[in-house]
Length: 203
Image (cartoon, rainbow, N blue to C red; front, side, top):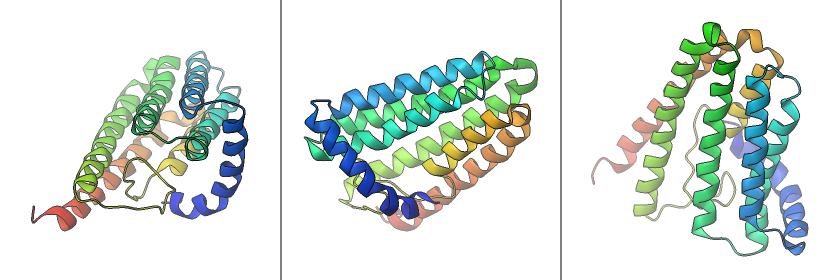
C-alpha cells in the first residue's frame, strides 16, 4: 500500500549508494545474497529468543534488498538477478514466521502456520499476475524499476517489514498479530485475483 509512495523518496538515495557499490566491484547478486544471509541470521536470532537484537540484521537485510536493484541499474541488470532477488525475498519472508514458531511452538505454531499459508497464497497471486502481465507486455515503474511486474495491494513490502519489526518488539503478541496480518494477506490476494479477473478475463 505504501511502496509506491515511499519509492520516490528513497530511490535517489539508493541509486546513489548503488553506484558507489557497483564502482567498488560488488555485484547486485552479491548484495542480494548478503541481504539473504543477514535475514537468515535475524531468523536464527529470533528462534533463539533474541528478538530485539534480531532487529539490526533484519533491517540491514531489507536495506540490502533495496540496494541490489540500485546496484544492478548502475551496472548490468539481468533477468537472473531479478529471479534471484524474488526467490531470496520469499525465503526471508518465510523464515521469519518460522523462527517465531520455533521460539515458542506451543503458543505460536497454529498462528504461524496460518500466516505462512497466507504468505503462500498472497505470493502465488503476485507471481501469477506478474506472469500474465509479462505475457501482455505490461509495464509499471510505480514501485521502482523491477524485473517482474509488481501489482499493488493492501499489504506490500513496507507493511511486511513493519510487521516483522513489530513482532520483534512485541514477540508475546505474535499469535494475535499473525492472525490479523494473515487475514489481511488473504484480502490482498483476493483483491489481486479480482484485478486479474478484470484485466485478463477475455483471454
